[in-house]
Figure: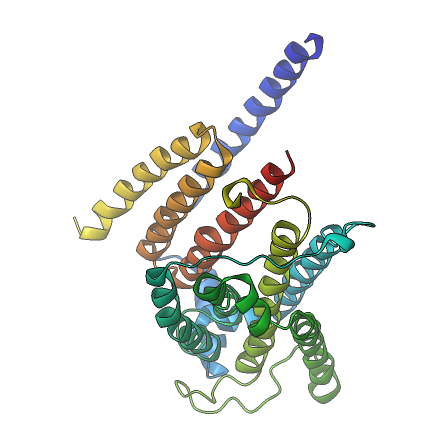
Length: 249
Length: 81
């Protein structure tokens, strides 16, 4: 291949420059474990003043809620893109079929035991985002993947019954819309977009932290729905359209 | 030395070995599994450096969602051949 040597040389130049810049950046970093933390000195009092015990959640949903709105929009747009790309092509829809699978009893029992446990853990992580590690994103991913334990327990037909896809498509839009609407509402009430305008309550209780808790729930709905819609796009492509996978033949 | 001061360099070393293992795995289906194991090592590191929020994200996305999407894609591609 004639272009191979040229490409390798180009990579060599780019890679060497990257390595030099990376090394310079790393050696200019403050040492780990030091006691100089200008961001902490500002973020922790700000979080406590809004009665938010988990400072990370305060940064995500209050102090820098604007960034989280952007991240949510990125996830929303990505999942929308995947769903659009993976939708059945013309002529593909006619071959739709729903496979029947054999499920091992041990797998079925394990999945059925862990299904309620996973849902409770997911809800717990979403609802306690303002108090303990986690929040809408982490809990949402747990909920969105946890639903698929039903696929392991009862096969694809069981999953289709407990996962009305349209509901989750609406849930994704609802979560995204609620976050943006909360921002506009705060602008109208308090004069700043996504400001913490709800009474913040007493530090350490479930009803503390004002909008942090509410935005965390909105993100939880959006992320859980997004994971379900994303996995549904892949599962539909694999199981309902096209040829039979090798392992099932 | 505190236990964390020993565990962080140990985990970083394991991460280098793990990253190499992921890069050197030829078959993408096997790579999904080594990537998942690498994700667990990253989770341990995040817990050690006191970033439990990031650790939770990593364990859910890096160990479950990403390998699952890779495996589903590979099976779809192979079923077409």
